[in-house]
Image (cartoon, rainbow, N blue to C red; front, side, top):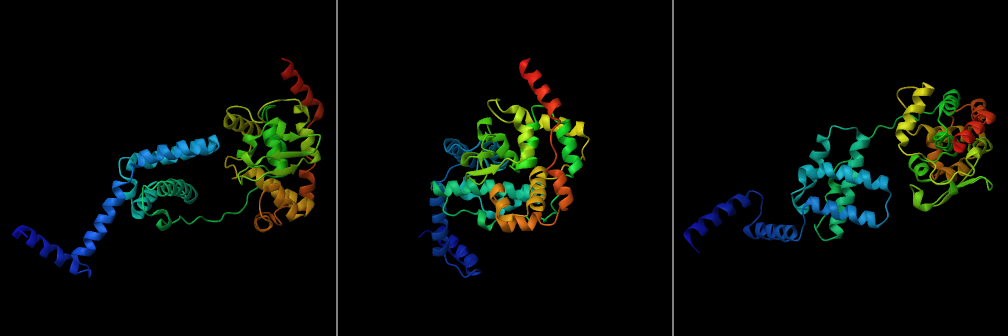
Length: 321
């Protein structure tokens, strides 16, 4: 052993002694780290692999787009680093640096969990650090719903292309993403139900949602229309409709779905049935929707119907043109 190596060994041994560790401990730890990193990949490479895999799995374009956008922001900082070298603290610090709300921060965390879980299954890292990354504390806010007057005003102001979107959300309770994936062939007016196929459901399970009498009237003029339920550039149409209806500037989160659940429970008083229609548990129904609506208002809500002559004539004149 050379004098220089002997001196280095003594210095290192003294530093490790403070922590009760030896040179062997340090060597074993660092060799394991090097082996892990040597078989790893850069973050940007793993992101591209994950996106390709999810596309091959036929994940929805909406999910793929969200996954791509969020992981791109992560890659802007860590893209050239080996994914095995990124620790839970690095991820935690980055999430806090985003300066976003708790819900958004937790969504970023979920996308990173998918990335690091994928990397572990591919053998690019030994342990997934995400379980050690703290979740942001989300404040449970009260459910906000539309009033009967707001719902009616919105439907009266809606364009002919968006009436089905609003009506299905308000009177069938489908999630926005589920409505966006619907085709007219999924709306069985003759059988009085909407089929939410497993491939189009958030929970990946098929369900049949009854078409209430008033919803049937809103959808009747579209009976022979083919293709997708929603028009292109849906968000622009939604914003235009809300402006015409002069609704509140702060739009309640999941306003249509929460309105449906609240008015349905108050009118039909069947939590188990409502849970099946919404794809939730009865406990969730009672937690969020119980006693939010008076029976009198519920009766008015389910009596919201189109001005038949105006809507049918307008629809026919548009398709004829």
